[in-house]
Image 1: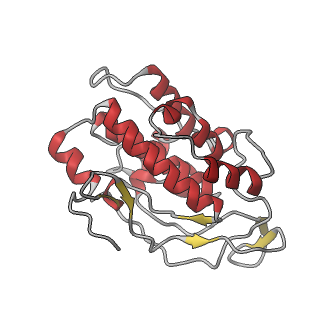
Image 2: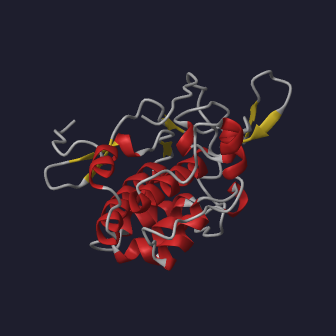
Length: 238
């Protein structure tokens, strides 16, 4: 892996405070392209967070720590639950991965979850934190965290978050059935505004893999099944 002398983004936000919209947009657009590329290859990261985003010498984002990443292998469309007593739809994972503060409600509730949509939720937490310099949900109390992640995200009066960016974050931090897919995120006007050029390769790959579906909740290639569960890791934000 190449050297990332800029450290991680968490350190930068802790030191410098909220990012200006331009910087947050630049970093987030790079991150979205990286995640879209992974998803187009049927790979999920499952541990996206600020401390896993490194900065090279030009201060471009580099995604790190693929310890919980999984390639979603082909399957029959249904996989057995852990006890073998019930089946859950293909694409759903049942292993807890990542950090409470970046985890979607379905993970926190211990439900089978779509790992592509779980990555999208984590992206929403990242974008909010870049602009506000604190997490959208308090992870010090699990009961409160469960409650808050099932409600509309609240924005502070200051620092002010642009309305179009608020709208995007609200589409990322919502229940799975109404959450943006990776394709919708890649095509969102706020993200496109900060991309140096349109991402035809990633966009084409996603459209091909998902049959051109753009409806909310169409998250990943529909004929894949999750890989074997990895170890549980209930990590807190560092």
